[in-house]
Length: 631
Image 1 (cartoon, one colour):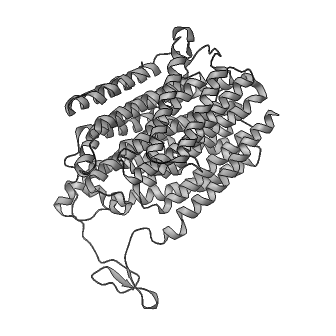
Image 2 (cartoon, rainbow, N blue to C red; image 1 turned 90 degrees about the horizontal axis):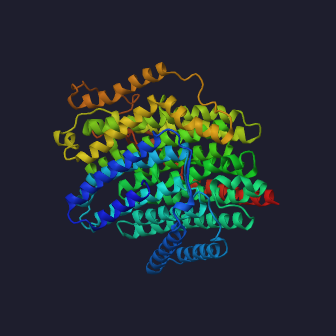
Image 3 (cartoon, rainbow, N blue to C red; image 1 turned 135 degrees about the vertical axis):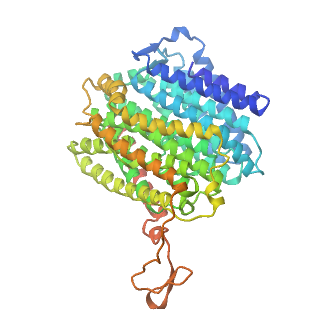
């Protein structure tokens, strides 16, 4: 139901007549999808498999779907004159035909399955993804009112959104690797279409960058399939370990596919380029869907790669990505790019934990996946609302946002708190990750500790800097304080629901661990994960109560009393009416609270280029490690 229902709803939206009908379909489909995912997660025993005998038509349908995807991508690559994309599409098509010819007859006992990890991933996709679709109803209305020159293709937009959700459900429920590869490519195509939605030159360029990088991961996935079957193995995810030592090479190839999909360095540029798309696209790609497919497959590979050269390489790439992306964000002036780099960084920490592969590290990866999805999605939705009201993506324009948009700012602060303030799960997960990394006996442990220590320090810096801009108080004209007027009910519904989820998952962290993360770790490793020791409800409730006061304070700012102001003190320097002061050697400088000198100290191009080069080298070593281990 969760795979087919969103797809059926997408078709209805594509061919629906009338805006009101389409919007109603979106809301109903979102509610049913979310309810279905929650029902699945709450349905008790989740260790289930669906036998292939009940779906004899599945293999032919999947192969036909792959041919349609390739035909679409070939057409678009030729139309937009993108030879590299065309070559990669044809290469993957050739591998698909080769696999189907030689190994298409190989039986798969259970093409679909459900376990604790796939159930929690389904909740993320179903609840967070559906709320994003509801938010998109109001957002896209305002988006096309503002960008009047763009063609209004909202029916097409919602069609792709729900096909995207269908593909993501397919990934997390697939036990058959050929079936998973099909859904993998569905998400690749949907992200390509969503990023290029506006059809501007920048959008087209960024969409093809995303396509090329993810196609390389798809080719690695196909090569892993061929290798598994050539060794007489079953193309089932649950049976990959039966290959013994020979399983490490396909595991390395699948990890490569996961690294491309989760936008780890050197592939992070495709996710940054996705910022050109409307905000619902960014929220879906960065929180609940696209990037989570990458970390999902790497977490699945954790038991196979733990303690091997492949696992060490994956952990190094994740740790370096977390550190580099966090440092870059110190001086990032674009709000959506800051959120994108934050996503890349947090995914890096999840990938590092999955590469380490110990029971505690995998527990952290699962918990962090949940918390990041909820908090980051809220931040993207709020930023989209601000962009539609203030027509800017620049962080420097967020000064005094708490006065201009107090309710939105309150929601904004909840999202920010979820990323770097205890007791929200992102911080608790980092705490547990430090403990897990300390226990690593090799040099990998100290390297990851350095990455998480300095990366977390940078994280606190840039989130605190942003929070300071939002809560700053000043006198503004009355019209500046009415920016929230006209925000749609769909946007408010999605944003308040996300805020409630952020609070709820924090309160329910012990339950989340007991119901999903810990049982999954126990089923895979046979031993319980340590989790976070000494966690108790009293400390969580106390800190949460303190955090609730800050959003209430921001709402109060709308009617705050006027404070007496005094002249700015500049340590004896002369200050004129234009807020200019006399500096050294006769210079005259303006007072600013902006990125003073930080752009040159933390250069994005220098940090990204050097980190990408290192990660490319580590990727090569990872594949070589898989080959040598196999021999």
